[in-house]
Image (cartoon, rainbow over all chains, first blue to last red; front, side, top):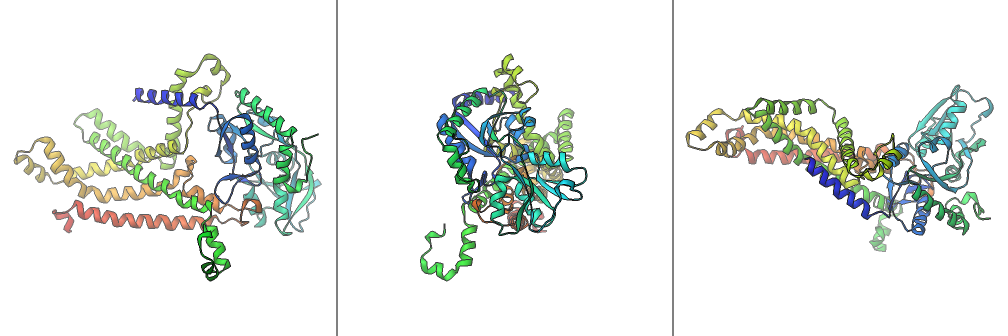
Length: 251
Length: 281
């Protein structure tokens, strides 16, 4: 049995070196328009298009792996994929466990959304049920700001939080503006953005293992290139029409 | 998908129905229907492993040598007492890390080990990437180990249920020990084992719903994805949480699967019992 395992390990080791240029990109596949499964059942969205573009420029052979949001960092570290592109904001807390590339999306305000007609006093909020997606910057913000007098409910996906908002199970949710804007404009007036905008996070970047300095360098180089020639600006305008025409990264 | 239909047929069907027909045959849904292959493969391969482990376990339990007998009953008692969900999570992860540990001895250098201190795998080179196929195989082996423990007990009991007289008569005819075992004992054992094995198979089929725990895109994971609410028009049809409707379809699927299995086992039972008294009762 032991020789069998060793033999298997040896072939796996060889296979590993032969495909050195393969990069697996981990994404959630449930966060439109950043990343989602389209009608064909394939991953699609802003990050998929951008990721494929970056890989082509860097000469990587890239494949996409979908992984639930709340285990995406542990699974990066366990080697199930090599990089995270899942609308993940760059924060100091996350930097303790993983590295980030330069951001490919500028810092973006988070917004509160409630059903139309809801009155909330954000200066002394109490007794409210606030929905967030678990393990996000919004969850951390709400926990720190409102947890004492309010109930914070965390959901597996952002869409689940919205479903419960629509069902009346939560009063308000906090999420990325980039995600909410299309949702609110598509709700036909049923939902509206309320209260203050919250600036948290340092933009969105590619999450990488700390040891993968080489990969980080290569991604940074192609991100800088795509920023400078307007590719990223064009993609942002395409996938986030509410953001306008920019410029976001070009001078 | 529906583009192949001629115009007159589309007119006859009507726009509403046409929309839903299109929706339920889009790529996402086709992927869902196709994922049935994982469930069926896991059931068949899992059953094959279970039979293998079961025969092995029963042989150990029947052994004349005490240590082997202890291993056999230790296996059946321990594995039967562990919830299948737990074992399903435990075995693939434990096996993966064992392989990585063994690889680490060979491929890691002190520098890469220090680089990765406190994290797993010990160094990046030792990482064993598990794709769908690898996870599927590990899932089948886990199912085999869990249901092999039940199968071992069933087969062990069935071996003892074969009337002594049959074996004595075979020996009296001058058959060798192995001839008695293969032509008489195991041949007649199936009749007593089949009802129990059919139970194990039913349990095993139900356990295939656990595949999604290992990130295999099986019918349960796809039902989850398809039923999940969507509020962004870019991502497809906007709809609230539809998961219970999709789970209902899975429910019907599993009931149909077990219903067909019952029919197949009834046929097998007739086949295994041909020419014996048990079959007629």
